[in-house]
Structures are given as C-alpha cells and as structure tokens.
Length: 468
Image 1 (cartoon, rainbow, N blue to C red):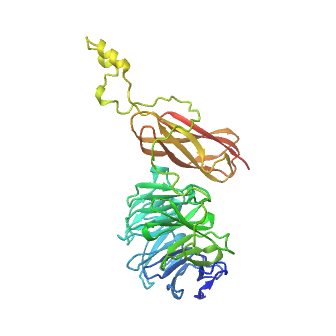
Image 2 (cartoon, rainbow, N blue to C red):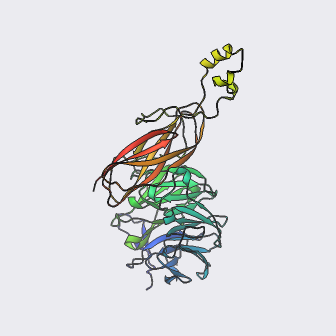
C-alpha cells in the first residue's frame, strides 16, 4: 500500500508543526535520518522497509519487505545516511546491518546473532561519521560497536569505566569525531571519543529540563548541539556541547502520550520526529520561546570530579577509615618507617623528626550509596540504578580505584542481581566522584536487601524494600 505523501497540518494551536508520511496503521516509523539535501529517510518497524521522502514530503522510493534475505527486514529500527549518499539500516530483528546504494539498491550486509565483534543482539540504531566509520547501538549486548563502512568491526565500547551501559537505543557522532550514546537503561547520555574513552556523562532520571526518561534516538545539529528523543517524557530536548539544557519540543495534542523514538535535523532549523505509536513522522519548527526551568539546566553527573566538595555525611562505614599508603612522600625516602633506621647509630634526631612527620596517603571510602531518583522502594521484575559517591579524604591522588558492589538479603528471598562495579581512574585529594551500577530484581523477589559498595576496604550501604 502506498504511503500518503501529503503534509497534514496539526491542530490550529500549533500551525507550524506538520505531520509527515505514514498515517497507515501498522507501519510504525521508528527511525529517521536526513541527508544534505533535506531528504527524509524513515525506517518502518512494522512495514519492514525504509522510505525516502523529498524535503517537501513527496515519496521518492520505498525499499524492502518482510524476511531475512537481501533488502528484506525484520523490524528495522535505525537508519543513517553518509555524506556520499549510502544508506545504512539497523535490521534489528535479523541482528544485522544492511547497506544500500543511494538509489535504494542492495549493496552489502554484515552481522548475525551473537556477542563477538561483527555480531549483534537487537541493534537499534546506527550512525556514520565523516571518516566513514559506522557506530551501532548493539542494544541487548549493552555496547556500541565500531565498524568500517564495509562491515569490518574493529572494536566495541562497553564503557566499563562508568559501570557500563544498559540497553542503548541511540547513537550519534559530531564533527569532531565524538560519539554520543543514549544509555537508556541508566537514563543518561554518554559522550566519548572515537576510541570509546568516556569524556562526560549527562543527565539523570526525571522530567525536568536536562533530565531524561528512557532516552532513545540522538542527532547532532548546528554547533554540535545534541538532540535527544526523550521517549519516556514524550518530548525532544536540545543540549549544548557541554550537556546544558537549551530548549525542548513537547509532543503536541492529541498525541501527548506518544513516545518519540528518533529525531533527525532539517531542512533548515526544523526537526523530524518518529512517532511510531501513532504511525506518523512529524516535522517541527523550533520552539517559539523559553519555557520556565523546571529542573536542572546542565549536566548533573559528570564522570570526573568538578572540584573540591565538603563531606555530605558518611553513611557509617564499618571498615577502617585509613586506606593504603599510595606513593609515600619521596622526600622522606622511607624514613617514616622506624625499621629503616635500625642500623643507624645516630638515629635520635631522625626519630624525633619522624614522630612529627606524617605519611602521605590516599584515604578512600564510599560517602553515600543511594537509589537514583530517591526512595527505597523497588518492584519485582524491575531494574534500578544505584549511585555511589567515593571521596578521597587523604592527601595523595588515588588512581584506578575499583568499587565493588554487593548485596545482602535482610528478609525474604530478594533474587537480586548486581550488574557490576565500576572503576575510577583518578580521585584527587579532597574530591568526590560518583559512579552508577544497575541492580536487577527477579519477578518473585520479596523482602528487603542491602546494597553495599566497597572501595579499598571501606563500606557504604543502602537498604531497599521490595514490595509486590
């Protein structure tokens, strides 16, 4: 069935917003992309095809059918177009990426179900940078895979330095080669370089400006601003290169309950938003004015320290508060240890001096463990993010601090799985850094459990109550 190519205007209250393309029940446009000419490309999850429109909404071509052969699809979710016009489609249900010539004819493919490089589990999004590198949001493998344009995959980013990512649904690249990932399971945006080294982490869970709820598709606009399909909040947000909130587009009436899954820029300053639950792609103009701030206006969870902070009150660590000695002061040459002076007949002066000396050390302990978003009640069958703040209260820099996460049942059978701990590369004396881990609760979980964090022998904990 042909897709309607007419531009349908929304309600008179929003005359500048126009609806594109697919008011046909069942096609579910999930991914969108644009090229340098303003043409729009739409991946239809239920239609098992992709469709190309002109900048004015005229359908130019439709490619694909249901299946696993060449130019066939199984619930495609993501689409991207490189500068030369080649089209890449994340064929989600077939666990592969397909590449097409600009005219829509099949060119090549790679992938297959698995965890190895070049294999995928439900890839949801794809992005291409200026150098022809292809980045795939490998959703169920909780990673981003980097390949070349012909399917050779050389690396995978799991972002273990920040506790890993969970169920990424979007990926984008900017003009500097940086990679942006919508860490949907952790309700945050991760920014890294092209080698997977984390540069920063933005946002927390919530509905305020700058916060996100189940973020999905990403796109880069002018000045490398990032556009986020904030799916759970039924809106699109625009963030600066540093993660600060700039503006937002709220899904208009009567579709306010929809969950946008992808966003693409252009033509001009307009954006194209995939609205699969209402079987449509919408084109929106920029917001006409500011909306009063309702939440944080910038990044709230940097991956590294931002400056000295005063203690916020420890939760009562039960371990020793004196951590290991790291790189003792070289000027003392080990003379702080009285055993080193045992052979010195004239040691009285040194002994007196040593009594006044203090061994420099890094003292590391969890300052606080808490559930992201606050509270202590969780539901069976759910997953929650736990935050842990780690402070260096010593006087030497600590390097490669690994925080181990654990659990202890306090009542009932909680059936809890801790995803992993996290590594902090550097903690400067007097600074506090924050890490995130994901905790999974089984469907039959009940009772309560203590979530603990251990960093260099010191403990912090948070008790969660599981209510059915």
